[in-house]
Length: 217
Image 1 (cartoon, helix red, strand yellow):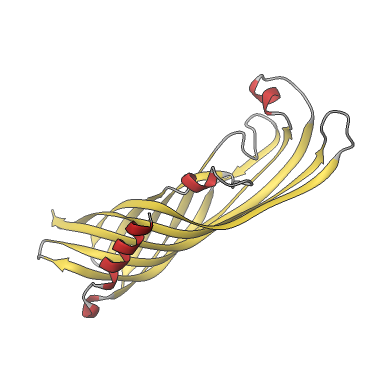
Image 2: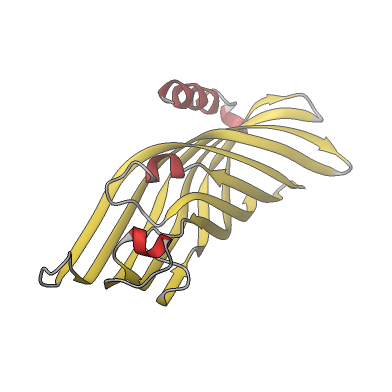
C-alpha cells in the first residue's frame, strides 16, 4: 500500500502545473454497518445512524491529455461524516445468536472519519459526456466512542464502561463519475473495513459508499 501511495502521489504532483484546478463536492455517505457490532437488530431501543452528509475539497490536474481521452490526478480532503448506534442489547453474543433472553446493558456510541485521498482518474468523452474511473489511496483518521451502562458478568455488580479508539489508517478507494465539465456526479467506495475489523474498539461501520455532486473551478 505504501508503494501505491507513493506512485499515486508522484502522478498527481507531475500533472501539468498550469492545468491544476480547484474542485469541491457535496453529497452523502452510506456506512456499511455490521449487525452485532454495537447494535443488535430486533432488540430494545435499537437505533443506527449510518447515513451522513459528506463533502470534499482539493485540486485536480491533467497528467495526460489526448483530446477525447486522458488521465487526471486528484488530491482531496474528504469528510465521510458521522455514524452512531445505540440499543439495550444482550451482553452475550451466544444469547443473541440463539434468540434467547439474557443479561442486557445499554450501549450508545458514535464516531466519524475524514482524511486525504490521492487518486488517478482515466477518462473518455463519449455521447457528449465525460466518463471516468478512479482508483487510489485514502489516508484517513477514524474515531469511535462507546458508553456501556449496566454491564455485568455472571453475578458481578453492574458497572458502567467507556471505550474509545482513534487512529490513522490507509485504505484503497475506487470510483466512477459522469458529467459535463465543470459538473459531475461522482461515486466512490472506500475500503475502510479492512482497518475497522482490526481495531480493539472498532467503529460500527466497515466500508463506506459516497455519492457526490462535484464541480471544478
